[in-house]
Image (cartoon, rainbow, N blue to C red; front, side, top):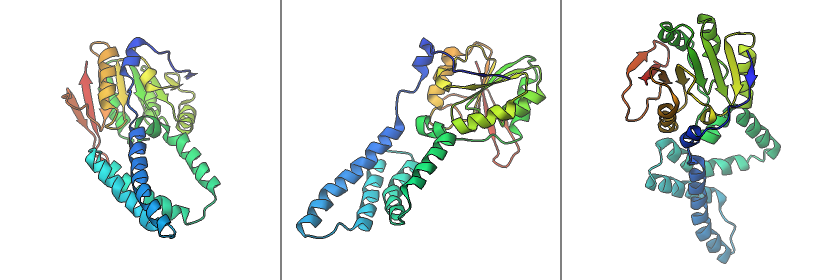
Length: 267
């Protein structure tokens, strides 16, 4: 087992990297809502020589942010976030908590959920039954070269490496805390390579099976990368999130608590 640096960029990789920054669009919506409310409320209360009523102002910002998110057809969870952000920010500010605690919480969250900030890819842990299903899919091809994109803490690679000792397994992770946990959990497994890296800058050309448990947001871009790089006859497996507009060649249903589905796409 070894930890290697990220693989170098290629022209095909660069084409597959998502160019949009959805979190910046959401920040712009929230800022627009705050600017719209404050540009009206502040002059009004200044002229009346009154203090700005921050609870009502925060609620107004939340309402305008919800309106803007609805008009721009944001997903329902973003609308909820926009509606609650300003009121909750005011409520927390009123508690007079030392700002250092917020900075510490931010650092801790960034160490674990870096993917959610940079690519809308939160930390999802595969169920304990998923590696067994993957091993069954791969059992027909001894010596399979397998990669887990966004491998988290190694919840797939560790049991898979033990179930398929002849397979060559690779995990890619870029959140510091989860990378370290996965590195320690897969240490000593001779058929497992644990890498720090960016999934968008990792070539898929050398792998027979590519596995991902990401989120709906990156799936179109990931499928474009799969089509560009994966060789004919290879297999792409997405846990829970199908590729939009593309029919899976096979769907494996796992009898676990979340009723996991593995969407399999043969290249």
